[in-house]
Image (cartoon, rainbow, N blue to C red; front, side):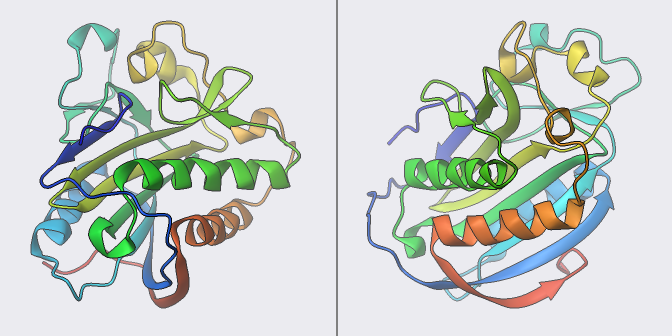
Length: 238
């Protein structure tokens, strides 16, 4: 079952979409600022070694400056990377930028156990971000042709997921208060001329932890999680 959208990659047996809501526990990791590649390797290892009893996890992180290029990414969308490294990764989609001032959340979910299909998970993530923006008086929307969240055509949040054996990894990036110049070095998500926005463009003052708390609660509500079992601050041991 292919998933529509340029930033989604699915592999393994298809799973039917169910509208049933199942309450599930969740582990949270607050990783602070990290280099990209160690976190990417850790999420791959977590996904490969997890089993039916493994509790799903959300990893909240801010990355050092990096461009990541999806498996089907085209080189022509990387215009002038300069001193920022470009990392070829195993998610779907084209090139995007991660850097300080951007909130990244990796969603390590058992899709089969959640009784949701990939499309429903993507829609739930987008709605969670829309809900958070609404609390700041900002109207936003998702697009059927390009995953993410947009404010009057400008992209404020990007999605790039991989579904492997009915388990997800990679996730979302939400622009909060960052240096936006690196986005001019690429065609964001493969779209020439795509405008990119951040929360600081619309809200003069906000607390980053408040945004994290709101997004965590909204993701739990939209994806059907009812409790947090463990909150940690480091990557899982391999």
